[in-house]
Image 1 (cartoon, rainbow, N blue to C red):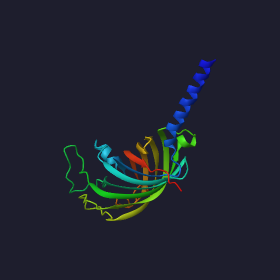
Image 2 (cartoon, rainbow, N blue to C red; image 1 turned 135 degrees about the horizontal axis):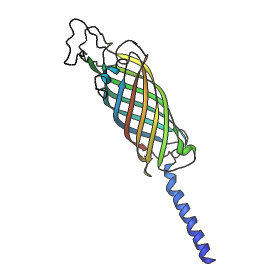
Image 3 (cartoon, rainbow, N blue to C red; image 1 turned 180 degrees about the vertical axis):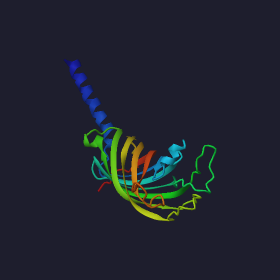
Image 4 (cartoon, one colour; image 1 turned 120 degrees about the vertical axis):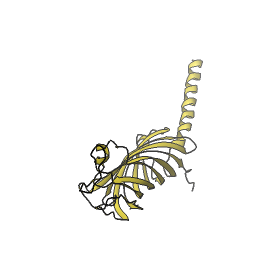
Length: 230
């Protein structure tokens, strides 16, 4: 009987210790800041030309983002994300009597690049907290509205196309985060997201579909500041 009582006491002590280790992952009422970066694939009106020429990954470039957020409660966050990167797009391959074709009979690729700055306000759901699991590995989803500015366009070399030099357009995005946090408040995460931008994000008027699209797979680090004591 004494051994059983000792075993029960040991299990209670272990469970108490485990609970103490889990409490650092409760982030309600805490601010955080994160920095992330990774490849982004840009898709616009004529991006199918890349795939037709066997250059599907050409419009893939690097992007970086800085985020400041606040955990309104254990399961809900709001954040402000600012990002920047270069994008690669393409003009239609018009063919006329002056077009110089390659050995395969293809017209030139009229590619160009531009700078893209984005700002989003997001609502983030923390599924561990919603299920009342305070553990290090945490899946999250986010959705938000914002705006993007495209500028610093290079010349595509296509005389029949004129690009708007500076464009500010509405945007929205959504995605999923998989975050691992350490007791110190520091964490690492991956971000898989999809963003849509109204034309003229790529510098051209609407041709077919009124939205340009980006798909990103990025990785980052996050730090959750200690909860304020009043």
